[in-house]
Image (cartoon, rainbow, N blue to C red):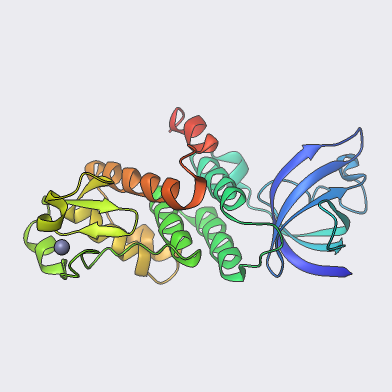
Length: 257
Ligand SMILES: [Zn+2]
């Protein structure tokens, strides 16, 4: 079967002097690993399209019983230069592709996750500040799209609405477990998960519900809130997406930022 689909390049690995093994996250067919014969030559049929974080249009010769598919054509749709040239934005892009790689199965389509990732790259390309808000928004939405949307407004145990508590006590501390936030009363009976301030919880909920990732760049997040949001997202991502494995890209880029 010949598949023609938009895709993001997640990973490439040298296979021989001239060929690569690449993993693409395709819009219509999910993650696919494939052999790109001649891709290291930078000439036709691929040019320099098969590079990590490029948005491409791929033609794939696909056999269902085969683990490694064959890339027959690949055209660049869009390259995002800041993801290569600016270290902090590169760190965010690398975190996103690593997360996608770890949290999705081969041949399982998630077109809305593909669109979210393209939205992240576009936002980073034009953003001038608060890049980390884009990553927070990406991660909290990715969790939702993959079936693990955390409840951030209602207590996951007693269902109490916490919005008035959050407004009245911005420095109040709330416990967050894998499914979402607990009210003060329910939180006292638990030692699971992590603790987040009311203000940080409200910001994270606004990211979960904002119109597109670029809208999150308008939200002011203090350093304390940022620390809480990062710890909460790391917990949720490890519980649901990466099986408690720390992200390699996060370790590398935390030393740079
Ligand atoms: Zn409760």
